[in-house]
Length: 151
Image (cartoon, rainbow, N blue to C red; front, side):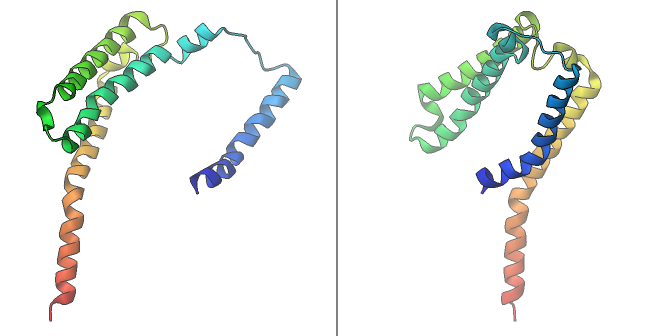
């Protein structure tokens, strides 16, 4: 369903963008600049995106693997994935601060108290909801079924 509904729904957004882009080209308002593949990768910060995705994948994947394996947390590859994930995320911080010309998360964002507090608030709100919602559904379902079955 998603593959059928999304293109139809996105047409309402994409069609006017293409129309006004063509109109701007005809009027000479739109200025296009050719960039190289290296400049494009720098602007979208391909290196930082890769480090971010790889770091979180290697850090979070062991939680799933440890639950299904027999050795749980004592296996070497589980510990190695966590360590490599932490090192990769630490490398991301260095890469973003020193090497990247267009970083995903500019270091000045992390020094802005408003941004840090808003991100913390969003994280804590989601964490609190998830921690309580897991049990609230079960409690409500049990109390509802007991209420119906009571004479």
